[in-house]
Amino acid sequence: MVVTIHRGPTPRLEELKISATPAIIVGDLVRIMGVCPDRETVVAALRECGIM
Image: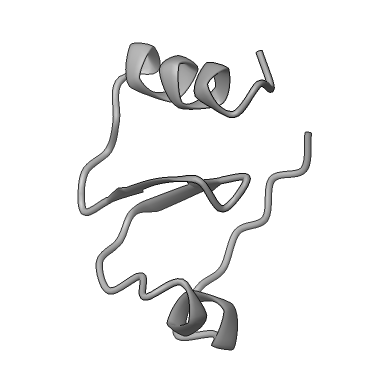
Protein backbone atom coordinates (compact mmCIF):
# COMPACT_ATOMS: atom_id res chain seq x y z
CA MET A 1 0.00 0.00 0.00
CA VAL A 2 1.28 3.47 -0.87
CA VAL A 3 0.34 6.53 1.17
CA THR A 4 0.89 9.88 -0.51
CA ILE A 5 0.47 13.13 1.40
CA HIS A 6 -0.13 16.34 -0.54
CA ARG A 7 0.01 19.78 1.01
CA GLY A 8 -1.45 22.67 -0.89
CA PRO A 9 -3.08 22.58 -4.32
CA THR A 10 -1.82 19.96 -6.77
CA PRO A 11 -2.92 18.98 -10.28
CA ARG A 12 -3.96 15.51 -9.00
CA LEU A 13 -6.32 16.99 -6.40
CA GLU A 14 -7.82 19.28 -9.02
CA GLU A 15 -8.24 16.30 -11.36
CA LEU A 16 -10.14 14.39 -8.66
CA LYS A 17 -12.14 17.52 -7.74
CA ILE A 18 -11.00 17.40 -4.13
CA SER A 19 -12.01 20.71 -2.63
CA ALA A 20 -11.94 19.98 1.09
CA THR A 21 -9.36 18.55 3.42
CA PRO A 22 -8.72 16.11 4.86
CA ALA A 23 -9.41 13.84 1.92
CA ILE A 24 -8.76 10.15 1.37
CA ILE A 25 -8.64 8.56 -2.07
CA VAL A 26 -8.45 4.79 -2.27
CA GLY A 27 -7.91 3.35 -5.72
CA ASP A 28 -9.69 6.34 -7.29
CA LEU A 29 -12.95 4.72 -6.17
CA VAL A 30 -13.62 5.95 -2.65
CA ARG A 31 -13.36 9.55 -1.62
CA ILE A 32 -13.77 10.80 1.91
CA MET A 33 -13.66 14.60 2.03
CA GLY A 34 -13.94 17.18 4.73
CA VAL A 35 -13.97 14.84 7.72
CA CYS A 36 -11.45 12.78 9.63
CA PRO A 37 -12.94 9.30 9.27
CA ASP A 38 -12.94 6.83 12.10
CA ARG A 39 -11.04 3.56 11.80
CA GLU A 40 -14.14 1.61 10.75
CA THR A 41 -14.80 3.98 7.83
CA VAL A 42 -11.22 3.70 6.56
CA VAL A 43 -11.30 -0.11 6.87
CA ALA A 44 -14.63 -0.22 4.99
CA ALA A 45 -13.18 1.95 2.20
CA LEU A 46 -10.13 -0.31 1.89
CA ARG A 47 -12.32 -3.42 1.83
CA GLU A 48 -14.55 -1.90 -0.85
CA CYS A 49 -11.47 -1.48 -3.06
CA GLY A 50 -10.25 -5.01 -2.32
CA ILE A 51 -7.17 -3.88 -0.41
CA MET A 52 -8.14 -5.53 2.89
